[in-house]
Length: 567
Image (cartoon, rainbow, N blue to C red; front, side, top):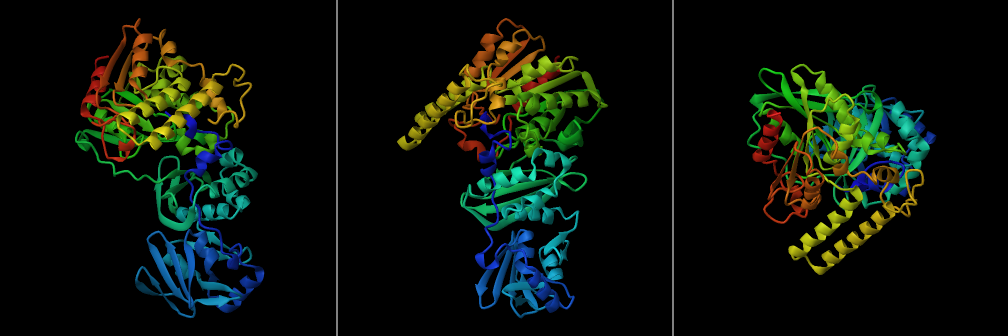
């Protein structure tokens, strides 16, 4: 529920810095790492046209670290790849195996040169060398190498070159001067090293994404670079690498009972990749759209070792209900969505959910009269706004999962107080309790500024006055009370709550009951051991259990399915 992790990029530099690791600065002996014209000429003479390239700049552009070990020995490493070179030798050792290095490794004017072909093969990259520019030329479809080049340029302050690979949408959202201004803050945020732990590539219906994991003093960090269909960098984001247990599919996941297909929600610069899980058999089927909580989320709403949206999708499909889930805009389009000064909960949550409903209504095999929204946390908080915006009446009803009934400001303070109370019950040491008391006081002060009538969307406080940025989001939503808005609405609701949830407590659940006591089309149920991830935990939840592998209980899914199917 902590909204401080989202959105506007230009303001939320600190939030981005939390998750970025960059290669270490180039050594003083090597300067910028970009060869001088004389060094290039020397390389050409030495190579005799055989293709030698300066080792450091070429290897580091591809995400590798280069370390001189003395006596002409050089170690090059990237992820699981370890290369041992020796000046003067025509062979090299790659992951313990001796290989032909193509040409002798040599040093010219204090710089070391190696065979381009050897380096490309050893680092599994498709590259050439632009002698005039003194840089690698990377194949357009070698996305891992291009992502590494992007990080390399940014780490060395060459924002203009980095931005040259941007899509037009990203260029509009983040011009090169802005990129140059924020990068030093990102690079200095943590004790970062040049050790790349791994790289991976995957594609969805909108982007080809490359994830680069780096080592830092505080643990692994992931840098994700997203390429559009034209091969341009269309967005990027940073996030701490998960230390959670690997997700495990639940026992009720029966792949023979459903099929999944990729879909695209919306269109244009903010199109979102998604997945439709369809029951097998004769339709038309009732369907639900899953709406994320606060912060950037993938289609599965992955948090720690849990994927509650995936569990809901396969579980409900097994009950004969189609499910559409999608990447949240603040994850798939982090920078572009962050650039809007007037970004609102409609932009973050409501509009995309309605687009998903519209997509389902046009899908063969779906009953357009029985499309429901299932919102978790902030997703449920936004449901009354969503229903207000649904002028065509496309949403037949909604299920709210661990969703606030009061203002976001009140929830922030209540959340911190609930955490403090639980830490005391668990017997945490005094220093931990003191830190939580400070957090509670800090949030109480923030909310007092939020509620100050002198401020509004037309007169926002400065970042120094109000720590939660972007401030516009908060002031736009300040006076919204979802349970009050829902009082006069007529779409049926099912409101479910975990009694072991410290992020959205039972007080919020009771708030829904009190506000909607005049309605006869609302049902409620709470679950004694359920935490905020919609998984069961027998201890007192304070979030420490989130890294364990856990699933949404079958009973919970059955309750949602029964409510949808009886309507």
